[in-house]
Length: 74
Image 1: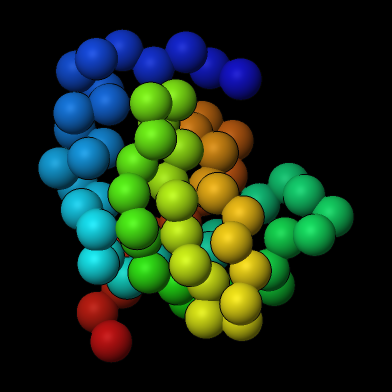
Image 2: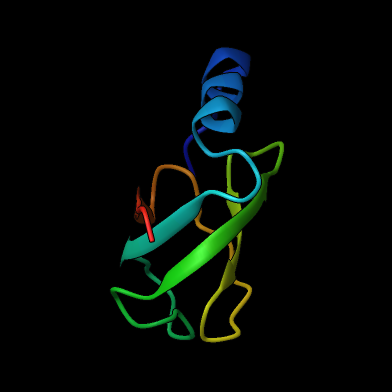
């Protein structure tokens, strides 16, 4: 896992405030939601992972530097 700087963490929190809608592009986890699943960001933890409530009911975090999402407008 990549380490995150304080500045990068602040930038992530600014870019993905609670309520931001995202779409999953890549997640390396056997229990990952399907690619294309949308969800709502609930926060960014101290490691830079996005905490997301996925529309399919999953609650897996988006791991900083490994998984990928994009912001969407519903």
